[in-house]
Image 1: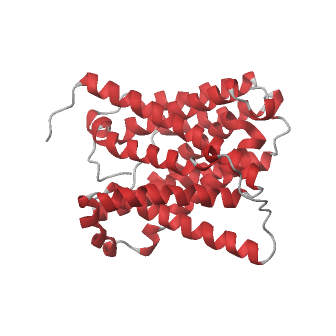
Image 2: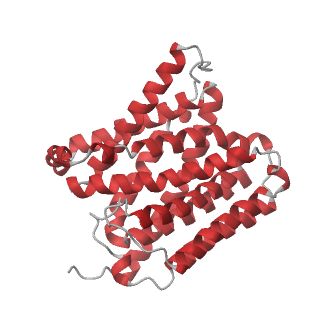
Length: 319
């Protein structure tokens, strides 16, 4: 067993991970704006995934360990390689929902979906670690996330948001848990995180390409043209950077701490974006802020009292 890392180093790693969580909110804002400029959120999602695929592909090509791990993909089952479907759904829903509800409310809904989906994924044993019991602490965390969504939706500035859209966001968040579980399986079988992430991006890119081409063929696309602002094409690179930070920090801080720190950064970054850079001048509802705080509560509930063995598992267990 390797010695426990220095506490100061762990704290620095956690701080970096929190910042990386905020990148998720930045990516959602970029993709949302790109979707609006393009007139088609699916094209925006495809661009995001494609640019992310280029970044991850470069990492795999330049990393000898990743190249050696590629043949091990033959050991994976076909259904284990479809985690990118969840990522594609997340990016597409985020690009559509961000201009309509703001990053803060979007993030609260995603966190709620991730927590609830995580409970189900653990219960059925979809992840590489097998089935896990639904403990009282995890059940309370799920209830708190649901309360966060309800409170956020009561805000005056979000009352006009379609409730079905909020439900769609929660569902997209739950698919993230499925994505993480399947990516974790690929990572276990290949022994390499970049390869597993690459499979995720390939699947999502292929799926989105097929959908975009079919919509264009039947005349259902609303694509209006490419915007000239180069910053709108950085969503995929930001997402790839977030994935890279996770792959590096998971060995240091552990899977659970990594997930909790990401959520903390995601919620905090979302509130700050909507506070200082609101979409189309929309104001941030105080109830949405309260909901964001409630969304952070499950982080404390789940993380409290977790044994060190759970906080520092092998990096081959989860993604």
